[in-house]
Image (cartoon, rainbow, N blue to C red; front, side, top):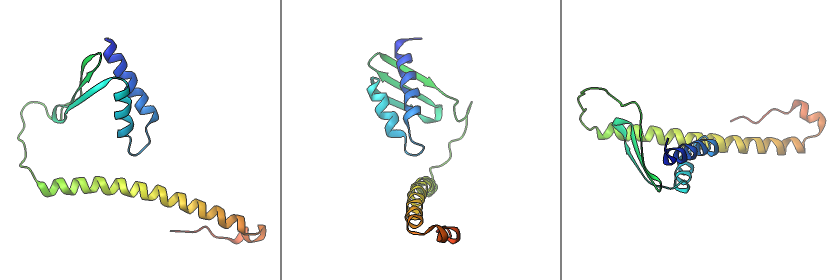
Length: 128
């Protein structure tokens, strides 16, 4: 195994360890940059990535989307927009849910501090 592959694998492992559950791409990009990756070329249908590094180029092959020959469907702009919006909305919902739960917990803590011990027993949790 070459030094370029070792450094790239270590950087990817590090990026996985430090990334948040949502929005981890900037962590991967910065970790790869610090490891000496100057360019990353993706060929999605072939599941191929080429990493140009300071130590030399590295290719990574995954499982292609199809094997053999396949017809390429006609481009459907509306379907692409729907798919992108669904992905964006899911990401937005996750961020909203996290923020909402944080605010809910903070409000609940404030309410509990203000209530006396007798009132705590009958206080209901705020709902959303």
